[in-house]
Length: 123
Length: 330
Image (cartoon, rainbow over all chains, first blue to last red; front, side, top):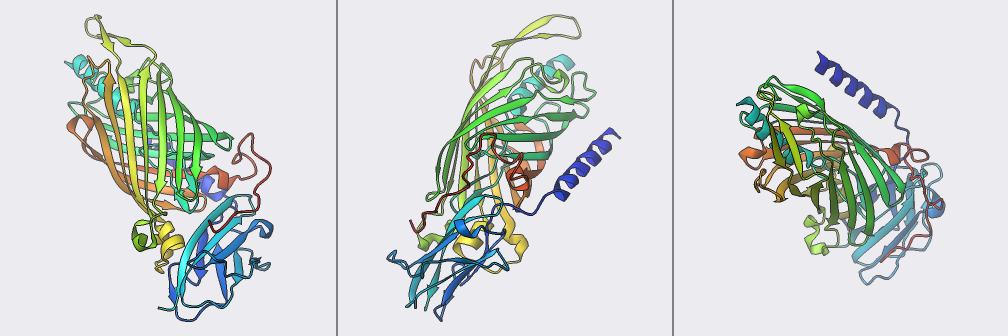
């Protein structure tokens, strides 16, 4: 009987914690276009990232570099004002090769996160 | 008979449970998210709460008894790199365990821990920290094995992700390891035990214990966000299969305890969300003295820094500037 009360109390407390969690957290990369680790036949004109939380535009950046480390983006990443979990950056015409995307973002709750991934243009 | 068995049981509990570190944390280093592990601590320093952690297993005593542990842990950052944590644990031992073989219930000694993260390298997904754990003697119930002596455990922790492997080994980049090693020593070298049958007093030596463990984990979130998005159902992209091991080896003043290493190997899986994680692992004893049969441990763990980012989820002495201009493309 005591055990049942304890377990019920724990379940209630855990449920309460889950229910009171607000919306903001670390912004992790949800998905991207081109897709992480993918090969695309047609060179993209921009790289778009979708995150798990809303971003602060002033402190969020993307860079795209080729295999030699040279930047191939046009320099300014934009956070979508209508959908602030989405950020994109235009890229120069990309010849076949492997490209690496570096991102560093600040979510609206002030957590910074960063990461990188590659995609390939052509076979 | 019952007294001698209980002495053995107490000794086993001391080595097998009280030095078993239940404190946990989570950590981010570059691309890498280190989840809070269930059986050992990880190198992270953060604001978090593990509640509840429930484990059920059969003790290594002879005869073995079923034991249920329910614990909670609250960790609070003082600065970005320094935190203090508290962990109470309630234990229920079924028959034939306990001092009179009738079972027992009560709290273990309260544990507190200080931890300082002295190194974090985003490029190499490496984190290292040092900690100092204190188990407060006399704060728990002796009937469930809580010792009357206080023990101190200076501990070193590390975590390393393999995201810096070359692209040709992309399949291995989601792997990560964590580890810890500590040395537990009591504030009193001996404990007096009164035989309930005849009132005689025996002196038992409290050993120093090497506390060590580690984990091997494969991060599906890492695979998706940093290596290759396979288009799996979202549930699978939150999973981190993991194997932990947690060991204790008496290393000093072992005249009564012996030097046998005890511990468990825990294969399981952790589901990682944005604000909490849920983990479940099997608890496989490495020898008969570590337990009988396979047990289980489960945990619900909240990331307070994500749930309450502007209040209790912030360090008490937080730096006010959230972020500078990031340096990318290293």
